[in-house]
Amino acid sequence: MPSEPQDTVKVDLGGRTVAVPKGGLYDRYRMDTDLDEVADDPRVSSVDFFRRLPKTEVDSPIGPTLTPNFYYRISTARLTMLAPTRAIRTRLPGELAPLEVAPGFGLVSVMFFRYDVCDIDFYTEAAVGIAVKPARHGKLGFFDLVTALKNDHLDSYVLSLPVSTDIAQVRGHDGYGFPKWVTGLDVDIDARRTTARVANDTGGTDVSLSAPTPAQTVYASGERVSSLTSYTSIGGAWHSTLNQTNLLAAGAVRFPRGVGLQVGQGRMADDLRSLNPTRPVQFDVVTEGQAALHMPVPTSVPSRNR
Image (cartoon, rainbow, N blue to C red; front, side, top):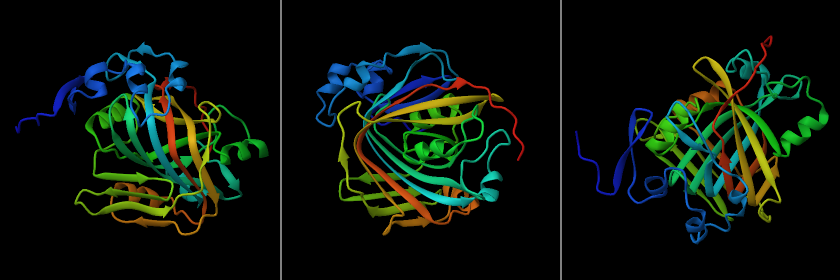
């Protein structure tokens, strides 16, 4: 076995050994990060959002851990597209139903994330997700749909979730039940341009994106907080995971032009193609944000007819 590089240390997560940056936030604090130290990081605008979110210790498949996982400086991009409901249903568990925006059409997204400062250190991530109806909600009305499209609250089922580090993969897969694997993954987002590339097993392109960044609006901390609920099955039981995002600079454009989405060869590309996406309907970019990712909690998901 090759020796571990000098700049990493090994940690145990529920019986899985992973390497993390030596002297990084996880190495020093094990999720109980000193907010005063983070506040001194020039990349972090403020930690006020986190001071109002106390952490609790919970048992999990990766052992005892503190929740939520705090992300102090993030940037994200999401391209939302129409897709035929028939194609979407072939990829959804029977208990979940697609969020239809018109008869026969739902919403699917390809997403990219860059986490510059967080409790488990820097990493990048990408996702293919399906917008679904809330698991314990009846028929959605017009205002439910409008709220979802405004990104104030979304419910989703994720098909792909590649990440760039081992600790993110083990925590996400074993602890949250997400379909995560480690690969080469570059995400660069600024006020001018948004670019991202996910590598496949041979180093080629799985999925990539390049587009002008929508004009950004600056928000005070806590002024605009969106949430995403994701459904996963852990040990045969349904769970929901809440992710709260504190938007500090964000923008969106409807029916975007000039978005270059390359769907190459790989696991993420296969998942995206299986949904048969058609017209892009919205491009959302957050050039500066913060997030709190809660551990999954059991949830009741009623049986549904396809």
